[in-house]
Amino acid sequence: MAIIPINIKEGTLKLEEYIVGIDLGTTNSLVAIIDRLTGKPIAIAGHNAEVIVPSIVYLNPNGEILIGHQAKPFLLNDPANTIFSVKRLMGKTYSDVDTNGSVLGYKLIDDNSESLIKIKSGGKFYTPIELSAFILKELKNRAEKQLGAKIVKAVITVPAYFNDAQRQATRDAGKLADLDVLRIVNEPTAASLAYGLGLDPSETKTIAVYDLGGGTFDISILKIHQGIFEVLSTHGNTQLGGDDFDNAIVRHWLDIYIELREEAQMHSLILQKLRLLAEEAKKHLSSAMNFETDLIIEKMSISLKLSRLDFEKLIKPLVDQTIASCKHAMKDASLSHSEIDEIIMVGGSTRIQFVQDEVKQFFNKSVLNTSLNPDEVVALGAAVEADILAGNRKDILLVDVTPLSLGIETLGSLMDVIIPRNSKVPQRAARQYTTSVDGQSTLRICIYQGERDNISHNRKLGEFFLSGIPGMPAGMPKIEITFMLDADGILKVRAKELRSQVEQHIEVKPQYGLSDKELEQMLLDSLVHAKEDMSYRSLKEAITEAQNLCYATQNFIKKNKEELSEFELEKTGIYIEHLKTAISIEDKDQILKAHDELNDFTKSYAERLMDKAIVMALKGKTIEDN
Ligand code: AMP
Image 1 (cartoon, rainbow, N blue to C red):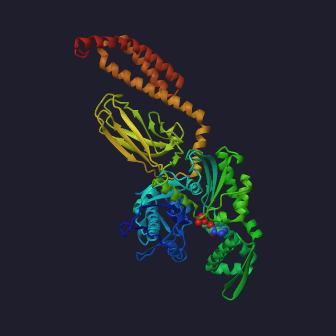
Image 2 (cartoon, rainbow, N blue to C red):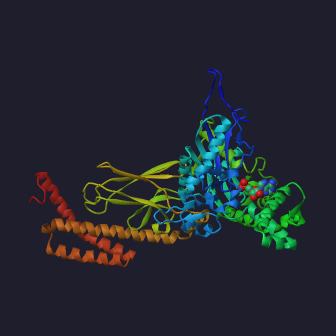
């Protein structure tokens, strides 16, 4: 049923503003809104009464583009032009997905000039952003038709482990679909919101979100405190889901029905048919104990059977893998089972009783949050977030935190953190820097993400140059670097020389994907290497300081040669050489010793010259005038 808002006073159709919540999934996508009558989130159905839009795009060579259910049949009939699982490619380069590429029916293109991946179909190239935009447009059209309103604003969900590049790509897809993306929300956060968790600012809870869909599995452990959702840990498997259960059933049938195996080897279509029947059996067994159907192929009819017990035996090794991931996530979050308050079940495969039982057993809980439709729960939560952003729930403020520190490279390849990890998002922070060389007119600013002191162990997000700095002695320019991390976790960096107001900025669109595994590894590494990092940092800082002292002393001598004795010049030269040798062998103790020697020796005459300069200045003269 279409909901058409009418402005009774004016007797006109009232074009109300709706902000929709969108779950842009790997296999399926959905759009949801808050029902004005009940105040509850609802998923919006299409003309076929289905709320799910399969995330499939068919690019017909004649130029027509089909989405969702209409595109699905072409997975078999025209796989080269039928794009599925495009979410896996968002914000990624060819090398990121090299291994995956082979299982996709369509062609990936690496044209070398573009670092981001492209997909070839019918002589044209498409980016994952464009393809996702087709799906978003379909969802937008569906919502507009059903609501009789124009949709311009949306909240879109992404997995908790999506990095900046993947979030930015999702945001860009929204833009391309003519949607103003107000916020990118983590999927487990959205699922929690759908269950009303996090809406009460006085509530503190630790929850687990177990998300088992058609092709992927994710477990996320979140802490909710004062409306802030902190992702404590995530784990999962991007190649594990309900499709694997279907395949296990197919293999089982091929094992026990020999005649079927022989037929299947000759006709590949039989396998497709079997896969569909396997899915039917699986779904049936979520509520029944036995499944039976007749498969008719050419001259024979086979009665296919499967009991729930057999099914459970078949999927046990796969479900065990998800439980192993849960174990990992709990360990990473340093939590015991008793500290988990709720377990939210997301994804169609969590309808399977055996899956629910195993999860209950692992977390030692008698109940799970399963009252909402597991296919819809993420979209419903996105709609709740949209409602909050629309200002309809003024008491609630949703905040996320940034999982890794953000900073820039400073002298000595050191990471200088500007926004520390776990800072609330949105966040703005600034720091002042200066130049290290006289007359330096350009400064290179390299942005990194990570926890290590040596930037080579962190992840480079981008770089830019602040050029046009007016000629000034080293140390004079005041360069302010500001990091602005918006609510979606997208970073804008601005560099400004405050004396001259010269300014430059970039929006960081990192080119390489960062998986949840890598993220965890980066955090783990920072702990393991903490001691080593500290000594690296102190050595690099000592080197930088020593280099600055050499540079400043040499400059001073050049300018004030006439004022210094032979002895002072000679001895200073020797001390500079000592210091340079210590720097070259990177021996921190020697550097510090040589640094102090040079500093102590030059101090006496530096003070003498300084005093003289002051006297001269009082007389209105400079030393050079003398
Ligand atoms: P999702 O990716 O969350 O949409 O989940 C889709 C997966 O859920 C597919 O593998 C479906 O076969 C599976 N699924 C949907 N309904 C059921 C059900 N009643 N029992 C078991 N699996 C189901």
